Image 1 (cartoon, one colour):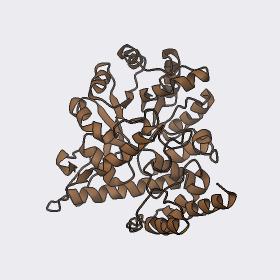
Image 2: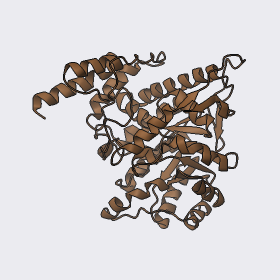
Image 3: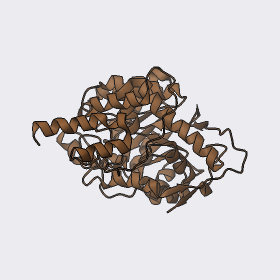
Image 4: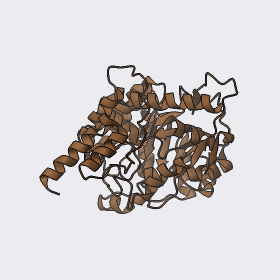
Length: 396
């Protein structure tokens, strides 16, 4: 691509938020470029964001995020995995990007059943996880790697502060990531956020047993609410080996040893089948996260919401079920709750919020999703996030 063509492309990307989805597509065609998400020219304008509580506006946050994250993330009007397929390091999906795309696409096939003859005009969004009262069932996911995944224009310390700070303002909590390529010191920096804010979940890569236990002790010392091992990161084994580390799949015996090594609630993150959900339950885990790691570790997996109902059928009520995968709007969160999740984790959207506006940017992203969730609950007759019926949704 010539320098002139590259500048035109960058101008297009920088203008995306300001002019809206439909105008972006028209502008792209005028310049001979495809839309970042291949959106049709007649696409509807996005709904206006709720009135911000701080000094920043959501559009300004997204514009600033694009400038900081480009080219690692284009901050597309719809974060659907199309433009960033195969871009790793970065925020795209692995290989063809199909797993990332499936997360997003599968959600579009779940429809909400509108009901307005009811008395649920003031929905209750509060819930409790691992003894912690939350004002909404929406947490920020385990996210890290600002230098190699996000362009390096934000430090790990500032990033984790943005996630925890933004979540705390809305009465919820965050997860702390453990990166394959990160030194132990980086993990310790992230864990400081748990100590500062008084709660949070420490996530550990599936390292060798001794190293996991060593990091569990750090998570405990930080005052964490729970600890998780993201077994879905086992796909990083080859890369970890090059770095002199061990990342490996775990057996039921391995997990049972880890559960026994701590008094913290133990979470197995990376469950995509009912049989493995039952293994996690059998070894004593208190919770699972239904996730394909954002489509970043194995190509061609189903979308997480496709596998959630069968998993929830086996273990719901006997352990906490968390889930992530393509959640961009409050309606998405309601779909996950209706199909068996107790709470959801939001990833890429809060990466944008953090880079575009720090803790306030994360707060704005989460406020938008929370507001949409409340509206969707009213329009489907759901009085409480703790009691979301399966009949709220239909699957196309």
